Amino acid sequence: MLRKLGARRALRFALLALPSVCVVDALLLEPEWIATRRLKIPGRKPRFRLAHFTDLHYRGDRALLKGVVKRINSLSPDLACFTGDIIEEKRHLGEALDLLRGVRSPLYGVPGNHDYWSGAPFEEIARAFEATGGAWLVDRETAFPGGALSIVGASSHDAGFIAKGDGKGKRLLLTHYPAFADLLKGRRFDLILAGHTHGGQIRIPFWGAPFLPWGTGRYEMGLYRTPAGPLYVNPGIGTFYAPVRIFCRPEITLLEF
Image (cartoon, rainbow, N blue to C red; front, side):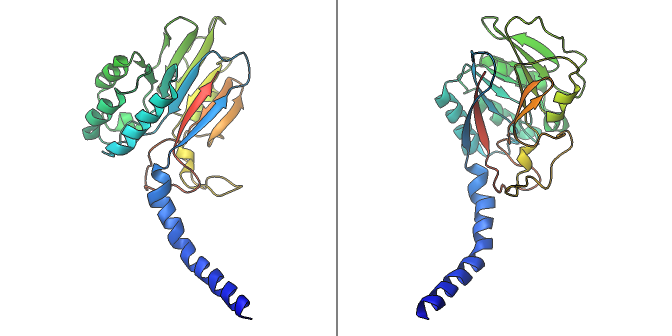
């Protein structure tokens, strides 16, 4: 009888404490509990290792971004790729770029909707990315040093500027919006990287995200097959609307392709 009473009290306490635990996890633990995910893309023999991160939504949280840069550098990738939304307010851009210059691999990136909405000066962003040996790609294509990799950066929903490629070496596409993968019409890539969704920030186990932004399509988070090639949607580093994450940790992804 005493054991039953003890078990009931323990269960009652656990049920009463559960909301508080969820609040602590959502507000204090998960938003800064960065995961490192490692993936090898199926297909031809991998030739490149890249670190993918996205959606910083930098608001002056210097320690978090310093940790992101340190983690990327510890992975020693051939290149680092960023798929949009450095900031929400222009006043935070200078500090964010100062920290991103600390990435010790060539850093390639594309803008997200918040980079446009904030009125961020893209010339300043381009200089910071070029300082790492990389590039800020606004609807253009560039060659990675050595010529074995071509990197395309799409900044909008118009794929008209993208050539079909010559089939010599690998092709990588950076876009903010996952649904862009469905607009490529016969253009093929060895890897497509996107952000924007934040993974929904709140995910229900075995079901998914109840809320996702426009521009997502059917691509919430993770690796997908598309007619244009494998697409990886990163859940991002920062948050939007509410500073919460539940079952959706921020992530840096190390991909071999």
